[in-house]
Length: 100
Image 1: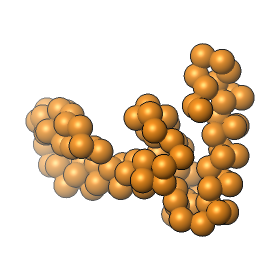
Image 2 (image 1 turned 180 degrees about the vertical axis):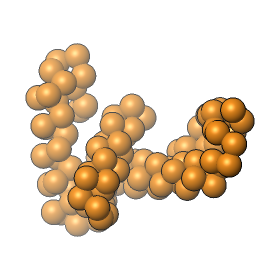
Image 3 (image 1 turned 90 degrees about the vertical axis):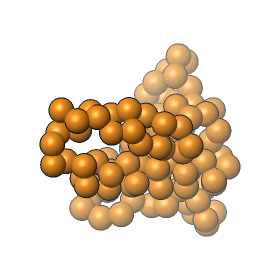
Image 4 (image 1 turned 30 degrees about the horizontal axis):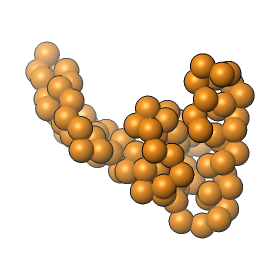
């Protein structure tokens, strides 16, 4: 297995990659970086772990629905959707994992 160094939101990671999977991994990293950066830039969530959880949920939603998830920033409707999602996550995670 090959190792690749990638950067997501300005932080470097060393990831294992099967031979021939470099292009797919690079695309995945680009997508994750874009999603996490959009959430960070929206200014509603600051902690890297929380940004990662929201990005993972957005990307999983995209896969489940077969299309793009709502964007992290922009309109007041987007902000309301993010607030609702954060509240649902807080309820699911309990006191130990509160996002805000």
